Amino acid sequence: MDKRVLLFTGKGGVGKTTCAAATALQAADRGYRTLVMSSDPAHSLSDAFHQPIGPEPVEIYPRLFAQEVDLYYSMKKYWGNIRDLLLMVFKWQGVHDIAAEELAAIPGMGEASALLWLDLFYHSDAYDLIIVDSAPTGETLTFLTLPQVTEWWLTKAFPFQSLIFQTVGFGVRKTTGIPLDKGYKELKDLFEKLRTIHRVLSDARISSVRLVLNPERMVIQEAKRAFTYLQLYGYGVDAVIVNRIFPGELQESSQWARYLQAQEQYLKEIENSFSPLPIFKVPHLREEVFGIDLLKKVGQEIYGDTNPAQVFYNQPTYRIVKNKNHFELRINLPFVTEKDLEVHQFGEELVIQIQNQRRNYFLPRFLEYYRINHYRLRDHQLCIRFVERRKDRQ
Image (cartoon, rainbow, N blue to C red; front, top):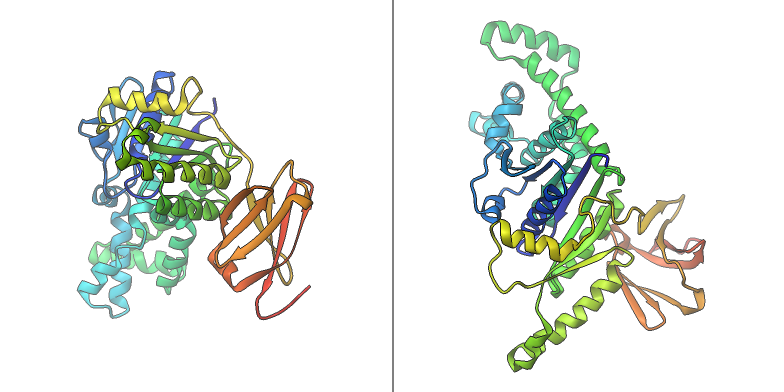
């Protein structure tokens, strides 16, 4: 198998760390040299494995290494000269010392640290599979779009060209000891590494996002939004894991009946909303999950005898194309005829009715200012044209 990267995300509290750790154990038992790393500032990998994990990878099980990325440790490892460079630039611009210290903490520095570790490990020969236990959904989207955002922010922050930096930096270094020239070189290297790992994460043959959710309304809504934006940004989602499903026999207890009826409806909604992605279901184990034995049990529930490192799905479910005066949303809908189809837009939600089945998709927020002008089926794709609400363009 070629080297693989798996990224687990979901709303806080759904059990993504548990699923990431369980997947790592399954892979290690299959013989893969596996690293599971946490990029969530609120680390819980050590709690899941029930053993200490530090800022550098440590072997916690045969062929399985774990790491909890620490911002300050990573800053010392990666950002020392860059921080000095930022402080000097801000002070040259007349920024107060305390404010300069605050500004020197680049937006997204924590996420960037995790990306730099990921770049390092991906290009080493130490691991076959790298699993990222990411922060909750919103922060994950920040994590994945960080390469573009950080480069833009730092370009705006610096008023000097590279030659001036290198020349002036050498002089400043001789008089003050602050290595601005080295800081600028580190900055350029950092941008290149971020671009490189962005290409890796955007390649669905290498990297896959797995969405973890519970059968609950708010969790499903956030997962659908995340799915929309991951597709929009070009990241491959290859599976959905529905965690903590309560068993049907609880229906006999009247106090659980209403909850289980709602759960049944939510499970149907998940099937309709995320099809054709594979959907793995994990029952509630009725106990707190931590330690190797229980994590292995979760891993078995998720994957059974299938290989957890494989690519389960590698087709974009939908994409948005910008044309001259409108946007077109294209959704894969095989085995559907136009007479069975109805399409409606309600704010940021798109509802597709296929006979007696309903699929709900969240639209990118900017499409709230557009309306559906036309839709049709073409080559097993539903093509929906959106035009600005204030104009009726054809």
